[in-house]
Length: 202
Image (spheres, rainbow, N blue to C red):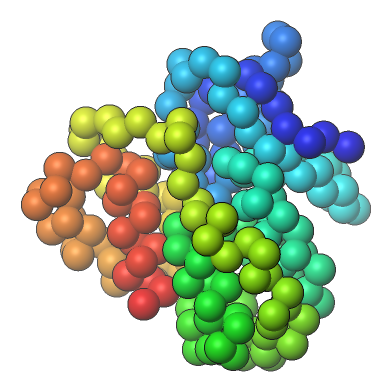
């Protein structure tokens, strides 16, 4: 139903953002909410609308290619919208496509909600079918603006990892490395979340 929203971000949480369009605030689930900042004007967010027995949810993406990759993942039996979003949270989408083409099930099972059987199904359904997206889907957006590190950024990043479906044990495992990374790099929440995802999927 929706292709994209053009509006202003009014709220950012570990699991979703709120984008205001023509006076209406839409709650949109995104892979990495901290790439957005409150007050950004004219943010263009591509939208996928999912309807289930529990209601309707909106999922947001930085560009049409990322949305297309999400919808390809949804076509796989055993992958729901939240699992697909957790997979896309890792910025290395070209690496994801490469893993699928190389039948690297071990890499795919590093994502929350993806077991061995589901990983094999992803390979079976999508191998060779994502090459038109390779190199175009980067997970990056020209709207990304670095912000200075501040108190609570690590807490927010860890909460975002939990919201994506990673277990408390997995989040705890990367907490210490992320603290060290933050101190060394003066990293903001977006950078910490990206590093946490890298550590969890390596």
